[in-house]
Image (cartoon, rainbow, N blue to C red; front, side, top):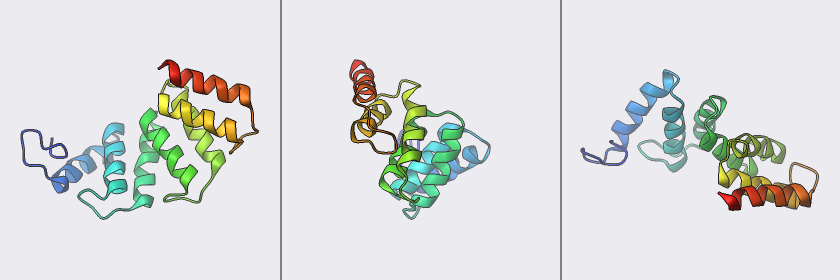
Amino acid sequence: MYAEGMGVKQDYTQALSWYRKAAEQGDAVAQFNLGAMYKKGEGVGQDDAQAIDWYRKAAEHGLAEAQFNLGVMYANGKGVRQDDAQAVNWYRKAAEQGFDQAQSNLGRMYDKGRGVRQDYAQAANWYRNAAEQ
């Protein structure tokens, strides 16, 4: 509510505080949101390494959006050493849950041969899955 200014004045510092409390208790959505706040620098100094830590916690709980964001961070080398194989790993986890952006990015990785052997059939399959969403 604080992050979105719903029913209260928009206050990223308060949102960060509440997300942190829930995240530290293992709530995957709060972990993801805390990672997003670090990524954007909302209520806290922008810190890609902290974003990675919180995204990873949420991703390990199976949250597809966190898995996708972790893949993006690895693909772009933000907060971690750039690693296409890790990007593919996280994109695949999210893609297999039906996350369309991950399916599209996984298709692109196969299309370009980044982190995997180039495979146009696999690329087409993942692009098709994303398009059907």
